[in-house]
Amino acid sequence: MEQNINTEIIPMPRIGDKAPVFKAVTTQGDIDFPKDYKGKWVILFSHPADFTPVCTSEFMTFASMEKMFNKANCQLVGLSVDGLYSHIAWLRTIKEKIEYKGMKNVEVKFPLIEDIKMDVAKAYGMIQPGESNTKAVRAVFFIDPKGIIRTIIYYPLSLGRNFKELYRILIGLQTADEFNVALPADWQPGDDVIVPTAGSCGVAKERMDNESDMTCYDWFFCTKKMSKQNIEDKVLNKK
Ligand code: BEZ
Image 1 (tube, helix red, strand yellow):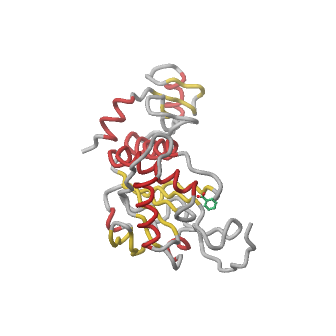
Image 2 (cartoon, helix red, strand yellow):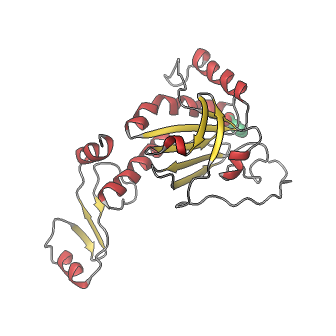
Image 3 (cartoon, protein in one colour):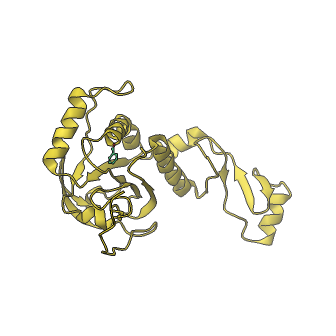
């Protein structure tokens, strides 16, 4: 572990905050963030360094799943503190040379930000000195179409992310928004969803008297059915 020599204190963004604004150079041209992504969900994620094995496995996996995320109105944006030419060389190597777990010829089409000065990484709390002063941790920010941060996950340098879980989070956030519901532990599309807790004695009684289409485990904990098809129609194929 590197010695902690960085004493600069920068507030970490939190869930519910506006995504910090920045302009950056990327492998797909310049971006003005989050302005350029208005009306779309964005997953902004950092990785520690180009030409490293865990990051390579992650980029190949994420790039292979990109269409699924795009279908859910979500754009992917990567970042590391490496320079643009390193990014370009690494992405070319991935496409031309790396075959991993059945994935080959993988083209990373989403933008990868160069952040040599660490301005963006610092604004998003991606530099965590206890882990590294010189590399970003594996941060994941889910940012909604209004530019609000909705979920944040941080992974350490040594552990690759679970991209199926990132997809589940995206669909979960969109489902909760669209249907005004909450989602229980380990929820997957097609599982029952949680309806808002009864806000009056009358509603609580009604629910416990079995006078609704809900399943109530107690007056404050009621679920209802939500088909995968319904989610596909209203979330994935939202017009
Ligand atoms: C990796 O992606 O393999 C990696 C990057 C930085 C530190 C440790 C592992």
